[in-house]
Amino acid sequence: MNLNDIAKQHYAWLEKMGWTARTTPLEQIALIASEIGEAVNECRGEKPTDKLGSELADIILRTVGLTERLGINIEEEIIKKMEKNQQRGNLGRIK
Image (cartoon, rainbow, N blue to C red; front, side, top):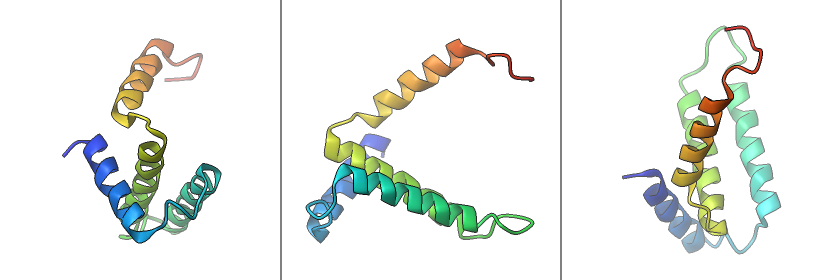
């Protein structure tokens, strides 16, 4: 299953639950940020907890749910961004 397939499947579940009708894209971005905060909490100790993977998955699922809602081909966007990043080099950063 590719990322766009995951996005479609997850968005279908969100619609079934009625959650897409109750949030705006801005609110969905805020929910992504809240998931990032939860991931941060899983890293507060000396090493990340076993729950970190689940929190990172939540970040991705909320993100692909939003991309599907907005008609964004996330796989295409990721590939374009990776290509752009490769062209940028380190922009003066120490390697």
